[in-house]
Image 1 (cartoon, rainbow, N blue to C red):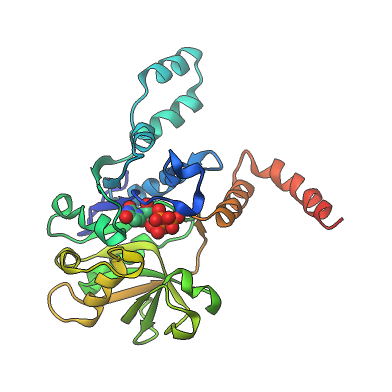
Image 2: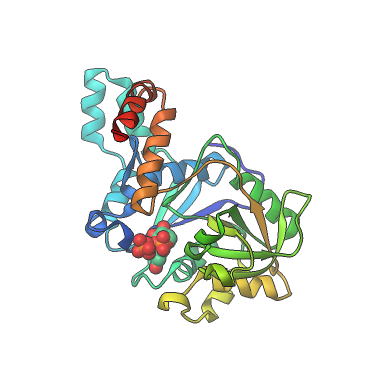
Length: 301
Ligand code: UTP
């Protein structure tokens, strides 16, 4: 675990969504438990938080929470068997997940949207800035994002979102940001946020991805936020209020991320993420890379 001198100590990971894009696999299993190479997606996300010193992790869970909790729990019988066999590498991989941070759970109840899920963290977080990481959005461990966002939050005192540039026709799948200036300090100020606009109505091609560092002022705003798009309480709508208003904790800033990101929430992106990450993996990479060109060539026949 990394020591942490910043004001941000807590990570909130909402995992209570229904995962309808990934049915039927998500009928009885959270999409965050889908394996990406040899770890469930959620493990990458918890590791990312812990790597920047956010050792206090709160998961907002739902009906299918069992597998998630079990994954981060100890399994004494399995550990004893592996120890007896002297299989230290497997033993280490089993133990590493139960030693990751200090993980807490709260249920969302009804999945009424991402904003509603984040509001469930109010009591645990208290009045301090905190990070939100979406469990189906993976950021490559070799690329920095969260630590930069934490620095920007400390500098600005507001809330910080992560943005990527997308093709204009893709913007309707994301929250979209209208920025005030193209920041030279590595971040931009956000004038307006719109949830999933049609391409012709989008103010930019800057799309929100699943990392936020939020001022606790967001909780008061979320309490007053009415259901928006899709009948859900949208985090983007609350951030729009913070972006447009003034006062302590108001102001929303964006860090534009140009590193490697993998979306595991939809089927095709998930498959691409698995192939990309497996190609980079030390043990599976060589075999997969050797097989892929031949397979790709066979597709043209
Ligand atoms: P998504 O919109 O990607 O999740 O929410 P979803 O609703 O599960 O997915 P689809 O569209 O039906 O396939 C982003 C994140 O917010 C969480 C999800 O678990 C996901 O990590 N979420 C969403 C909640 O925790 N609660 C909600 O009510 C909605």
